[in-house]
Length: 447
Image (cartoon, rainbow, N blue to C red; front, side, top):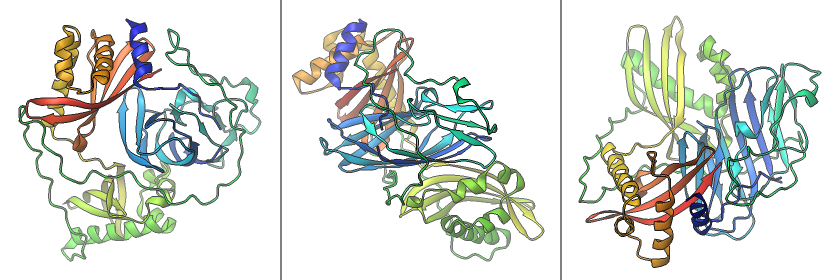
């Protein structure tokens, strides 16, 4: 069964388990004590097809992704890491991919090794080129960049570390069975610490602000609850609520201007220790200026709690949660969390799509004609490939379903294929009067 499935995957997509190669520019900012990482820069790609993927560490938040000819992209933050699938209108020529992401890595010990197993730098399904890595880190840490390896960073508080004694993962972890597609070996990037030229403005991840369409009439879904009305950020005079809402206006101005003095004066000691000032002053310039829209504000005698949507270029970019404490001469920030804004799909829509995938899994174990009918693909060749694909999947374990774009009915199915290999299937669904059908699909293995 495994050999047949791998053959079908070859027909579905030419997925190259290629190592990240070398030639554009990447800037990374890392705080070893907290594990925070921000990466911002460009790589050169030459896509041969309409779709490619990249994989990052679990919990990575993509803040910028743009390239010439891009149609859209979807993000799956599942247990395999953060898988980003990019779809192109145009391909077949070299171009720059602008990419920025951030998040927290599970870092321990000294020295710290960020190698292939950490996925601090993406693994691409196509060859890419990167020429320079410029790394920023605290002064009390020292950076070592071993040559002849996947972009590996070693950080240590030791100024005389013997890099030869540090264990480094240079190659992909070998799968339990032969990989379905050939690996491509290529020269690794020569480490460099040349400061980057100013990065050109990048397109921020588009927010899905429009209303989500209804699923098929055959499976009626309750509509999502309407969001709470936003609170205006116009100047207010109603006591503490007015003070706090106006403080947020000045906070936005400080973040946008990288005003370290203002941020330091208004951020509590514990958050400063955790690196929040450095985090905010290093927000990519491509998303600045930011403006906040307060969606909820609660005031007590001692503190104020806010949730806000941070907007860049008229598009919702981040959701933020803050707790401000009243002090003698004003307000001090005690709690802060921020993550990319993404409108949630109505639970009924999620349940409907998951139910459809469950039907596909059950049909794949029973009858070819049933799964053909469920798929609903009009093209005979595509239909034959899809049927063989789904019949070859592991049906003994539940298939994980992630609704990646509720507005366009896009979902990703993750299926355990072997102890070290999973199969990801990106689906674009179409709503028919009688139920769902598959409009298009793309399958690829993930080791």
